[in-house]
Image 1 (cartoon, rainbow, N blue to C red):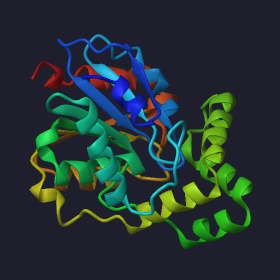
Image 2 (image 1 turned 180 degrees about the vertical axis):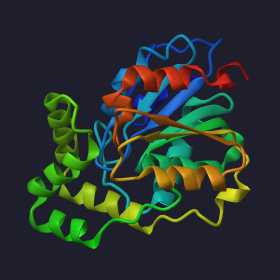
Image 3 (image 1 turned 120 degrees about the vertical axis):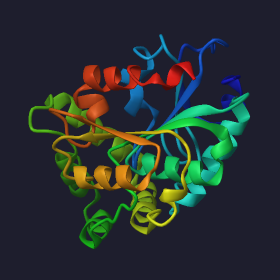
Image 4 (image 1 turned 180 degrees about the horizontal axis):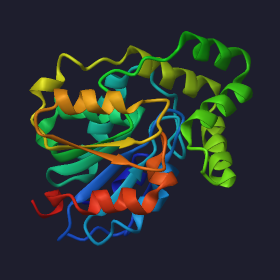
Length: 257
């Protein structure tokens, strides 16, 4: 597993440790719409005991140049190429929200690349209210603030919420619109019963953007899946309640497979 190959391809990422340990499996993490690798900062270090953790910036996000895609399938093809660049064998793949949709597509397209997947606050389909798309065009900053206000529980530190808004605004209007269009067009409902990769589904107790019922539906659709709910969190449990989120990940038996 040679992470420096990502740099050679111009792909932004964060990793811990920087040099992969051959004794540990690789866990790659995919952020959501308008996000970046920084979404997973609170997972990188704590998971070192079990895995080599790397968080990847999608095209047009963070430190990866280019434009965002308006298709989850296109993002999935890009992720597959990135994974083939760095992995010497099957790995674990975790995705949040739109990133979870991308992970589903990767698992359906190239299951041989994966040991297991983690789907965080996502669904088999991710419809976006047309009003959100319209308002992003007209009032980008205000609409980003509105979206972010729904993404965190009421008890979340305002500094954490402000950082979330900064990250999303940093992606820019074009990328964010493309991301939300990709979400709106995504629907893997019919294909998921055919998915044969072990799957951990994590939901946020108070998630308004991807309500728990979407995670429950995923659990019903995916044969080899388990479902955990993180209390005191909404759409961003990896940031809102990182200790419990990381504990749920650490307790999965996959790392020894």
